[in-house]
Amino acid sequence: MHNTNILKNIVRNLKVILIASRDSRNRYNFLLEPLKLMDNVTVKLIKNEKNIFQFTRQSLKQINEFKDYDCVIAIGANYTSLLWALLTIFVIKAKFIVRLGGNPFAILKNDLYDVVSSLNTKRLLYIITNTLFTPIILLLSDHVIVVSEYLQKTFEKYYFRKTKFAVIPQFVKCNVLNLNRKTKENNINLLTVTNLQYKKKFYPIKKVISYLAMANNRLEQKINYRILGGGVYKNELIAYLDKLDLRSTSLNVEVLGYVDDPVDFYKSSDVFLYASEIDILPNVLLEAQSFGLPLLVNKYQPFYDMFKCKENVLFFDIDDREEFLGHCHRLFSNKELRSSIGQENFKYVCENYTIESVAKQLFYLLKKIC
Image 1 (cartoon, helix red, strand yellow):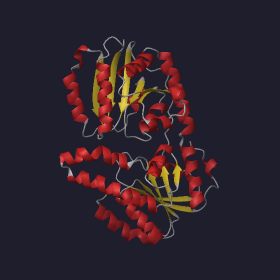
Image 2 (cartoon, helix red, strand yellow):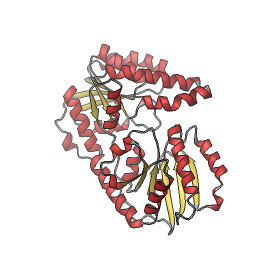
Image 3 (cartoon, helix red, strand yellow):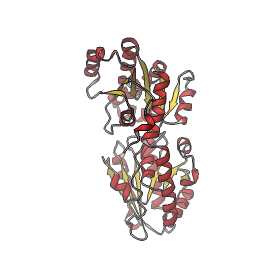
Image 4 (tube, rainbow, N blue to C red):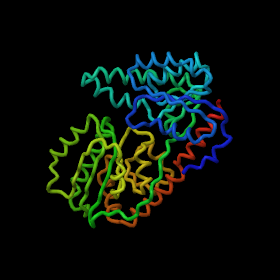
């Protein structure tokens, strides 16, 4: 049960519109749920579940209903956000805030070559237009919510120094800490939850699999490695595993695709492995900590910024096989170490990424600008 007392009297009689694009993971809840904790705040959720023409027509048709609203918050830098930025400024005449959870310029660089070479014109148009919309939306916004200081500094490098930023991360629900994982002796259940839509997530995972496959006698345990996540590189990863032929090794890898609710996988895992060169604040790293899992994470600046206590994460250079296997040996062979790191991770997340702490940051921002 949430403590709503901490949010009383921060903002009074505020009417907010929350604009969300199509999203199978409903990430708009990172704002909607904290908004619901606030007394005397009316929240209207508008989701774009149609094509852009239908959504534009629907928005124009209902815009007059919202002229007494104080603030519009949009999720992501896309056509939906740009449309509502313009409607907010010129029709509603309210404050406009956009929330960005990632760097669209990095995604453009990651995807452009593959999309062009595959002649996927629809995807290409989507990437280019969203990237072009980003600077326009940032300039139109009264405030921009970003999930980390790293992302703020990144945008400031692109000459958005006059843009007002607020660093407000997503929240994670803390689970019951499980210290009695039922893993067979000399077995390690290793888990990765990722998105195989991106090359800079696919290649690092491919590398760590090759390291584990070539470990020979370096690792004494039988490793059951489960990878959750779909995308264009999923089949390529499966083909790579077939080519490796792991039957003579102690490594078993399952590529299970996208899983709607991975709770059982977190609960039954011993170590969480994450390797990527494109993320900012991956929610799966917060989720893994909320289940008390120790983390193996590649050295990447946004991840360094994410973890204030470096002792609770084992960082490895994605190109350093020996360092990676050394960390694996250290974690896999020491159950007490896994348990102590997992407890610290659980404590850290539950103190810093609660819905209440995120709500307080969000509502102090609303009080400031509305």
